Length: 307
Image (cartoon, rainbow, N blue to C red; front, top):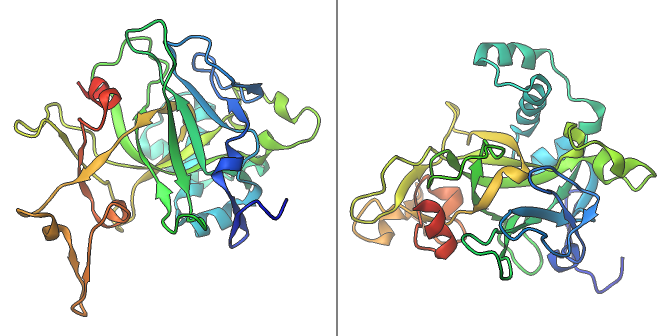
């Protein structure tokens, strides 16, 4: 570690400057298979999506309990257990069966310590074109840094049936979620001989994301705005509903706009019990607002996906 490399300590987790982290990328997919040992310098098929993370994670072998505390995601352990149970059975279990399995399920030792990345890169397919330079999109999931005092956890579109060969039909089958953590088992990033030879069919050979869910988009866009309304899903105790998904199920970033409750933006501001007012801004709206519009007109890629 040189003195020129910026670092920020977060209770045991080092947040390394993202520019250094992005210098060397691991390709995560060829078609839809994760191939974490293949360096990605270009995409061979411009009509296929590709995902990548840095070869060197932001932090390695971090206790899962510390990550849950520092990132504010106490549901991570149970969500990871559910993902592992579902992966083992290769089927969606009924809720009652799943909860019964969960009570007697302990995390395997390889998942007690995790490797964490602050962002991933998605190389988008060239829709309708066979030539050209594929567009790259970053998805952030990081704590605050010296250069940016605001944590950045982006919202994305998730495809739960990423292996479905049928073409995508607008937002049908897609879900909006906020990425709160990009991680893998620490076994995947060990620098010991043979550690990169974990089969991608095993859970320990995958890079995953912990996400917090929004409601399913309605079948039709708002008649006047031509945008789709979504709301953050919460459990009975008020906590956001989360889950673990393969990183390759992330389709692309999804930009949200707060849904105003009045005629102007100040109607969103929160009036506290002591008389002060918390203003809703682009930096804090995802933490303080539950109701949003999917911004269908953010860019051409979003418009093509939504419509």
